[in-house]
Amino acid sequence: MIKGNDPILLTPGPLTTSLETKQAMLRDWGSWDATFNRITASICEDVVDVVHGKATHVAVPLQGSGTFSVEAAIGNLVPRDGKVLVPNNGAYCLRILKICKYLGRAHVALDIPEDKHPTAAMIEEALVKDPSITHVAQVHCETGAGILNPLAEIAEVCAKHGKGLIVDAMSSFGALDIDVSKHPMDAVIAASGKCIEGPPGMGFVIARKAVLEKCQGNSHSLAMDLYDQWTYMQKTTQWRFTPPTHVVAAFHAALGQFKAEGGQPARGARYRKNCETLIEGMGALGFRTFLSKEVQAPVIVTFHAPGDPAYTFKDFYEKVKARGYILYPGKLTQVETFRVGCIGAIDHNEMRNVVSAVAETLKEMGVQKVAPKLLAAA
Image (spheres, rainbow, N blue to C red):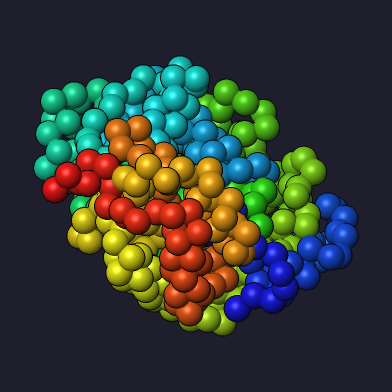
């Protein structure tokens, strides 16, 4: 899948990209160039197609990381007198709550343990309890732990109660099925450096056109005004302000490879195989996953850290890195963990190599007890 000696990124993005995607960044583009603007238009059409939204939705690209687009979506699609319900089971849910606070949008958290997901019944109870809620902001795949939240069920409840649904699909877009034609969503938000396997630097909001058309004046920010960005692009085909041209070109190349692979079903199948291979191999070494199989998304896996006193994450990270793999620290506060991503331009054979690198590292460190501290006595 990849060529060269660069380390492989086992993170939830940025991630390892293909040589073809890297090569697409070798050309310079003018931001007003007609060919470049056609690339932007093509990208916008393609990402809408990924979520089956051609009849109802439009894509608005935005410079910056995925969080920029999450903030823009909330700041534009939620009126200033709206109120947002955030089912909270991880770090990126907490980030949405923080965004709402910054934007001055009324908000309420539905707190859920990090290893559990919200249910339709929980959401419905919260909506009935507080009729002033206008929107639900849901993280689809919460990569703080790697949990998959039940998007279709939540969408049905929101539709039933007439609430807008804003979906942070940063780590699921392109890998997991999202169908806005079957399950109503006001917005699906993603970014270039995730499961489409492009480089980071651009986000996009796939918004229901009928909702976006009513958003003029909602934005707190000129740079993040999605309505202004969209209408300007409709009139001129151009970005309002300097676009990340190399990122756009590379993302276009990555989308071409995504379609050639077979789109979301094929991309998701490869990631699931990666995830299964990783969990099986790490399990054979004695590692335990933080999440149960039922709620584990095939994007990133959280493992309990070994309870052996010879283990420290810093040394473990550096020694695995020396063998060619970049891991991710844990994001949980209750127990010590680390995370291993399953996405990017890699396949299950590479995941076997990852397990071998971990085994060699444990041996070098003198780690004998792989069971976590909370289970070491059991």
